[in-house]
Image (cartoon, rainbow, N blue to C red; front, side):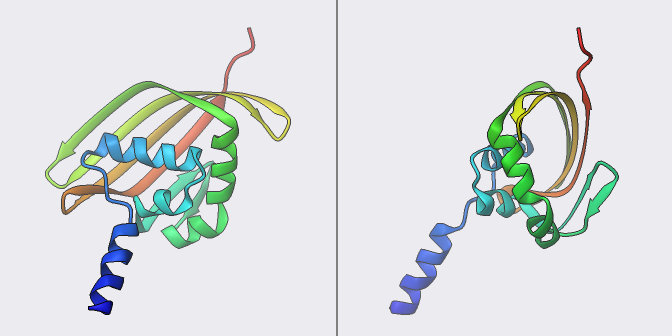
Length: 143
């Protein structure tokens, strides 16, 4: 009985996968912005590939060890606004493409960026998990 109780507690503490690809991407962004590392990592496949600024993270563990904390710090001090969202599904695979505008300040510098995000997701049971992310951004033009 005690083993069953421990298993139930461990299972209850794991974040559930989101029901749609869009909800998954929203949950991932929200987890990063709120500093919830475990929730963000749970939405990534263990073998996720992340491409950003010419660099590659080749797994969830590599991302967690290298850039996750700086992404959290950045998103906690800035505000991202979704400008455009497009989603395509084919069976248990989906592609989500987003354009964003991010403003605020980070490490004392003003931020105004336009970002592009492409995510590939796979359906896992009733939810979706991110298997690939590609991020790029550019500075907004001065007026």
